[in-house]
Image 1 (tube, rainbow, N blue to C red):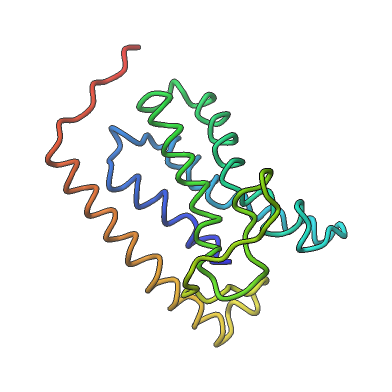
Image 2: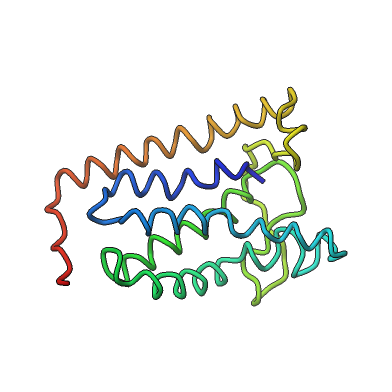
Length: 182
């Protein structure tokens, strides 16, 4: 898995690129939180849930259908703070779905249950280029952790910076959205 900071880069890049008119601060923070939410499944390891189980690490919480449903609920709760329900839902769904998709690009683990509950199969992307992050701060602060962070910089942070710039360019070319009526 990438580090928690790296998972937050996707919604941060989208939010910066789209601007505050389209991604309110509460929506941005919700997107960043949802991008990290799937890794709460590590609690299951402490509870004895096997890694490869549907409820295990990189299981149901990393699934795309779960991202769609959770983001619907959060978008409903934020419907008065942002650009409108549909836009908020799309932003949040992409934010949470990015977690499993980034994990599928890592060099370790047992794959991601992207299609749960329709399938328990675990998937990896055709290429795995992001070094898998170690669990625990001590191991992250080691030489292996430095390799992980450099990998994340190359394969996530820099592309996210490019995405932010691309979205910013499009935003500059398009008119600002109408303000919602209070």
